[in-house]
Length: 361
Image (tube, rainbow, N blue to C red; front, side, top):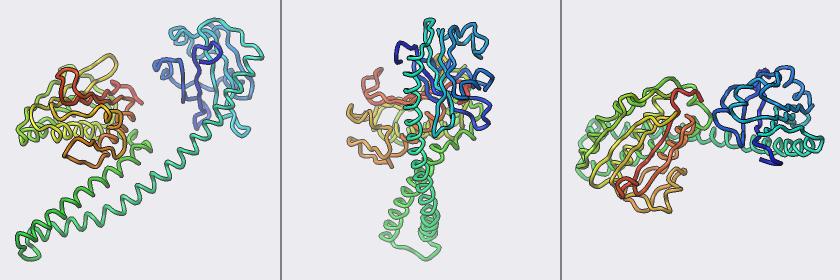
């Protein structure tokens, strides 16, 4: 943080203009940032009126709404500055120190200049977000318009392959089956393309409720075991008996588990696929471990990027499955990563993701 400050935060006005929501923070713990919204009381109203407000001791000053939390965070002094855009106050910038500090006129001038730069950066980010939303709407519309006719063609091919339009010779059947397979791949790609705008535009939030990840994993275990057995692979499951619930979207979390396990099976020629789930601190950790071909070190940072497909494997997907998994996990406030080779076995890969337990995001 600048000028000897412990940290800083940017808070934007909520639509009802009755509270401020932390949007960006630096030097502060996640716990403190997520402590709750800041009500627009008299002290906040003074800052929002365009006047800087300095607090010498945040642990005792009655103008501070979260005094106990500030003490636990190690915050002593606070400077609140209005965040202006086009002459209108849209939020606050706050500077925090770990030692008592009487902010001078020079401090106010310096931090106000930084706040102005923050407002400019925020405006540019919002413009980019608007452009991104327009692009995502276009992708969603185009994908939706493509899906219906392809599904109809797929249906007609199914009718013909069933012999309802007349008998087919073996060559014709083979050609029809290949065409049907390619259309199925296109429909899968379109479904993935439709998923991206839904997740990016926040629709996943409306699906969230209390979810048992243990049930999500165990409900897929039979299918996963069958997939592994078809390839001559062993399949094992290790789920902690006291695995806590998480706050999330059950179908989306199922989608993540299914995608990771399917990938593990597809990229493993021999050996084993294992799913593990356990609680670690305030999170639930899920691991999918395989003994497959592994991932080159140069490819590891790219595996969660859109349309990335590894260069060392025969199986080729759409290149969107893992990027969608990343979006889903991040929308839940979690993390996702890959290890290859798996540190425990020295071979294959391990894909891991975490979801906060029962914490609304």
